[in-house]
Image: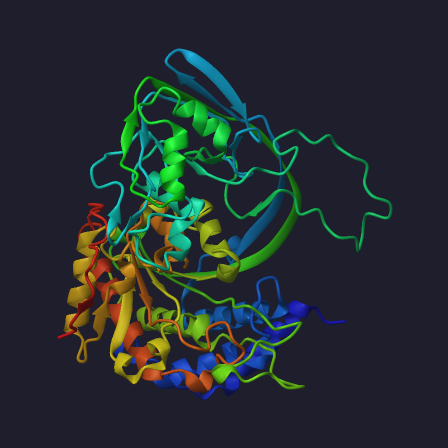
Amino acid sequence: MPSRRLFLTALLATLLTVSPGAQRAAKGGIDSIQQDSLKEWLTYIASDELQGRATFSEGLGLAAGYISAHLAQWGVKPAGDNGTYLQVVRQVSVRTTSRASVTVTVNGQSKTFKDGDGITFPRAMGGKQTITGDQVQFVGYGLTESGQDDYASVDVKGKIVVWLGPEGPKTSQSGLGRLLSSTARNRSAIEKGAAAAIGPGSAPPAGRGVPTPPTAPAAGRGRGAAPDDGDFTTVQRYDARVPPSLTAQDQFFEFLFSGADVKYAELKQKADAQEPLPPVALKGVTLTINVDADYTVVRTRLTHNVVGIVEGSDPKLKDTYVLYGAHYDHVGYREGVVPAGRGGQAPTTGEDRISNGADDDGSGTVAIMAIARAFAQGPRPKRSMLFVWHAGEELGLLGSRYNADYPVVPLEKIVAHINMDMVGRNRNDDPKQANTVLVVGSDRISTELHEINEAANKSLPKPLTLDYEMNDPADTESIYTRSDHYSYASKGIPIVFFFSGLHPDYHRVSDHVDKIVFDKVQRVAQLAYETGRRVGNLDHAPVRDNRGPRAGKRKEPGA
């Protein structure tokens, strides 16, 4: 019987042979980014044959083969494992045995809280380390958003940050959503340089943190049995040291604030009433955070990123890279009840149950295919162009998080990352948005990259309107943290994220090719090409001045 790989190779060769777009010779450069090619590629990528491109599915494998075959045809160099275009992404499920603890010393009196008893460590707490700090900063609600900046008057670099108030203050804007989560507020503190962050959390299940003795396998356990999913699942280095991000219960906070002028009971009462909580440094307090856990891998799953390189023209600068990215996975097909479609119409028997993901993120997938061909067959910048089609974004940025921890090129050689996710529709299908693209993150790490992107846009024959609304830290959707660029931004790499906004077909079976605005995909791709070309020809890497987002900046006219 012929191997599956040989069958797929023959199938893809046939697709390329009969494809009208493949028969047309690409001229390369920005003018080669044309709507007919984008439509041709997306018609296959978002077809029912690929069954919604779910991670770990055969449909995603077909998409990977399709992209790889085109890269080979265009002369893009493989950058994956063993000379291929595929980088294996390993998702592991891990069981944690915790011995972690926090010792609090207040005015000479000490008390130790073990993991699961007053203090809770995440199951993926990182590598073993001990952090001792006598600079403990209470930051109120720990929020940075419109009308509420608890960090405005404090510098938390190197300090241990504590916050309270799960519901946020009354004065805060409504609909904060993700910004109110413990994860988001702890992350905000750590992004501002805190050594550790501690916020309120619910009590853990009984026995949490107690090492679990090994048990005999269940009868019949083996082939075909349900796998052990462990305590957490990750694609990242789970034993690397990271700033502790903890949650705690009343007994911990009561002792922590026992020597303060304002006691915890009073602060909790104010937090429950959503009254102002002014920041204050806790005097006479020392915290010793002991991160101590053993990890056992109990399950491994494999998928692939697709990766290719167009080498730069400069003998020295070609060893540095501009990274282009998009995710080529989607959410697969509905096994159960199909949600109502647009207009709230209920599904009927035989209703389409495949989520084709034409916009999410078929649009970004084909956009960087066009950019890869443009650089491969046209003038090459001084720097090399690295292209990554990430797997598993829909499951938690799996492919980009993996590549950020196990990169195909050294991270320090990546000078900028350009990400495209959903660039094929108008926001809420509003025709007034036809000329608008949302730009996120461009000024957070490098204001020079931000300025390069704006200059690139103004140089185009028909500039876009750049909208920075979702770059605001108060964005309740937290778009900055929700696509693959964040995996690289969290490593300090300057990023630009292009996004055309949500619409009624988001994550619906109705996200079809016939609703894509290919003029928009083309123009956003051309902007991304020009921005990357300019960065690729810089004699220096974009300066990382880390000024952060310019809150309140909305729309920038394109001309």
